[in-house]
Image 1: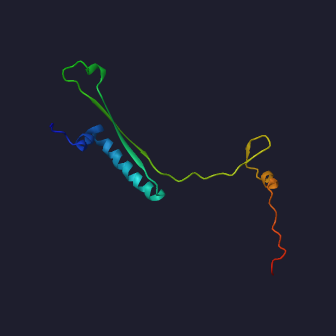
Image 2: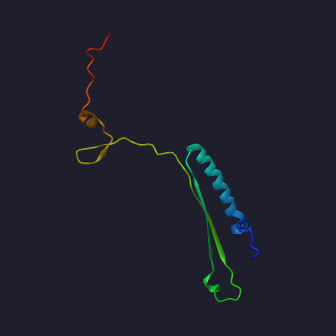
Image 3: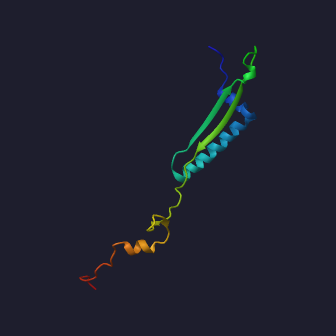
Length: 114
């Protein structure tokens, strides 16, 4: 079996260590977001390994590695705003019309003991 180099040794060299620095930052941010929102976070490391076109016919071609770290962090739900629909079908914050049309009444107090 071939002597396979540890992945961490290779990752440490991608972008002169910046990939691993970004990964550490992403992990730190994910931990804080998970603690705050109690929902999962996902961190993805992607590596693209390619051979430049002008290297394909050489005896000893080199490869290019591009590394990226992305994360999907939990977050708070954005606040909601209450709207009604006006007679023309538009959203409106003028809630008076909606309140006038709602079939609410003040409860009858008869029979209540004082």
